[in-house]
Length: 500
Image 1 (cartoon, rainbow, N blue to C red):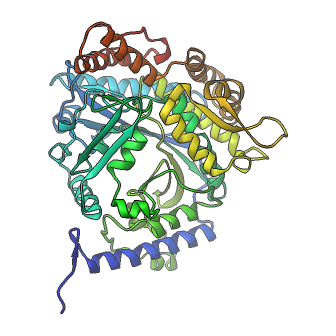
Image 2 (image 1 turned 180 degrees about the vertical axis):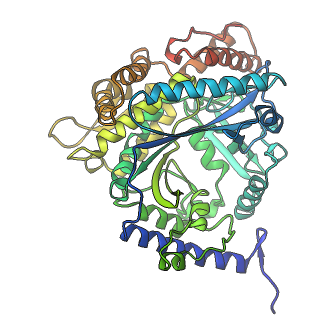
Image 3 (image 1 turned 30 degrees about the vertical axis):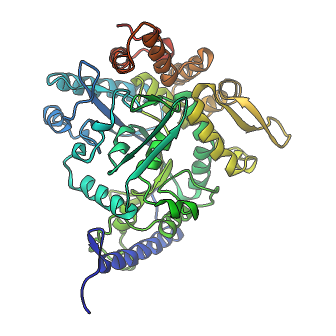
């Protein structure tokens, strides 16, 4: 009697208190929404890119602490694996020459970081999954030496209670197990943030969910894992399986995975935060001293730290985000769909396509999500991940008719979605020169049916045909990719083959 019950490193009283705090935070969020206390958006967007470290041989380098010391910039920070970094770009107003400004900032920052990394033979590679990663690279010993990553790993492992199974059936079949979440570190992405009013949140989130498949079709860049050719965008199945806290019996019962596309369109941001609390137990039950409802009663604005922390352990592909800036609360949609790379130009083109398209779709009088079942959007997402630029998607018929039709993604983008993206960028008051250049990159990929994934696969098979074994071919592709990435010519213009 009186003995503490320990579960996964936190005692039961910690978890019960955290659960109560989460419920208070959710109630606080509801009050903030009802009282209309949120900031009016200033058309702000933000950008984060996760990066890989690889040497001149194309192999991963477990050196992010040393490289970060050399870079010595707050814009760069650790990520989950020792071969990962992340760069954060300060928020920008979506207007004028913002796209070119973003591109220039990224070129400058990544160029500097690459030069510092090369000093220790650990150059920066911006790619969805580094092709040369091997099972021995993705082990708990290679997690970054940061307390929160170690704690997160321990909690997910404890919640699952057994090894993680990685089983991906693609062009080839990968089947293996892992005793840690380290394989998640293979997934490096671009995160696009958009600040929205509470009243517009649902339209933007629904639009982002509807076009996630299209983003993947034109932007896939992760065809290899552990030497196997899998899906054209292998990050989603890998991420889901590498963070899956559900043992097989809970999977069979239909318990939701923490890496989640979702299951319905929404009418408010509150619904998503409430779902996170209802469906997903806490991984990191760390309580803040703040009492959110008391802060509201006193006329202040709560940080809602427990809600923010819990939200960060539910890996939606479009995630709701609550934040404070200068004491004023705001909401953002965080788009986590895209892989990193291939080039700065490609990354900014993907961003231009997304921001323009979401703006147009969110303002349509007959919204896309009223004409497309949510299950179709989810199925499209998987189809695009499997097939990339060659995907065919189910899409509402154009015009006033109803029903869905199957259409090649490249045709859908060129005929219907690029004009919508252009109109959306016009609505953001983005300069026509930026609009035309970066949307022209998306059009070029569709016209040539080339994106990062298709280039990697083609270069790999050319290397095999030239007589290289599998590992040497993947290394040659990685080395050539890195050279072309730093040239910043968009991927659809890259020469074929590994080049060495």
